[in-house]
Length: 436
Ligand code: DCP
Ligand code: MG
Image (cartoon, rainbow, N blue to C red):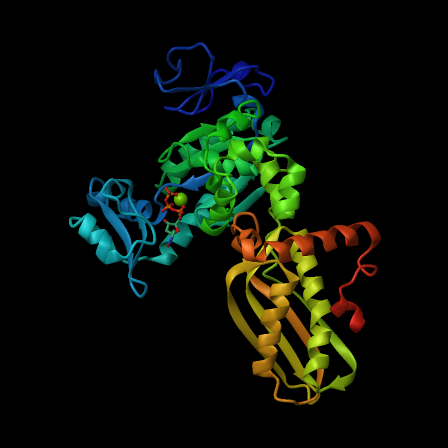
């Protein structure tokens, strides 16, 4: 499996080629791999100078099931059912019948009556995921898990350690996931997370795709705007109504005009359309929740006063969650009464959020349910069930209805960054200075 030609594997190599059979680096002009004789050679001028990757397992739950029951290898397999009665995933054979994730099971079975249906066994999938994660972490400390079967990896600077460019290490990783865990994965290699994520999806299953810096704009130009993370159906419709359908149209639109029309989101779309994404691969995913609380100097029993004290806390949580590039799906409110009894109330949001306004509205609703008029000595609010904001899709940030709210918060954040957190407040934040 080791690359035979380390000279070609040097990070400085101009053009690179990789044998898709054994994962070894080969000479860019070789017709066949000198190591395994394979003829599936991946060539790309930037192959050995790119180091940000997205790795995503193929039909993950179904692959684990096939691994554990070889008799299923050539059968269409659907994992799902149970309480929700929908398809969690379908193997690539079942997909040829049109079966896909989130499809109601009855529809899936109509499309593919011969499918073998298996109930999900999460413990088994989590175990496979842990082993895959460990293999990734043996390559680089910069592993950012996105979901159970996918992660971003930044291999910048570890080429010397592995005596191989990132592409070769990734091909080896792909081979080890297959031989040691028994499932297959697809790799997307590029210069940033946005492009790497798109790349990993281009050649599934067992794919290895590269999007280079030089080709990014051209590659993206004719793709629909919906390919951009977080651009859901609603925003796509709004952009289409304004005549914007392809990423190429975003590339040629004036960024200032996009900002004026869509706020911060417009600017972000403009940058992504040009293949620019400077978010780092962030392995710091330890924080299970982000919260803030305040203890009052004197107990408060009046609802309005409690609400006023909630707002700066929401701003604080929002600021911290934005700094970490995360979004939370569950909001939690905490009240400590004067008698020191504590109560917490939580609610799951429709979409993960990082907005102070959304958190405040949710917190206020929870407060209305939880607070019985008793004097309180402390109030706290937080977000948990955290996800990477970009990968979570930020449907809320991108939903046209909330776009103004998001743009306004982005503007306030920018002012705070410039002048300090305490200088800029909203009417609500200024009404009652933060305590505790
Ligand atoms: N999953 C789920 N419900 C969904 C989507 C996914 O339960 N609506 C589960 C089952 C998948 C796993 O998460 O196996 C990983 O999700 P992916 O989106 O990566 O899908 P797959 O790995 O199954 O297929 P692909 O090869 O397209 O990545
Ligand atoms: Mg997958």
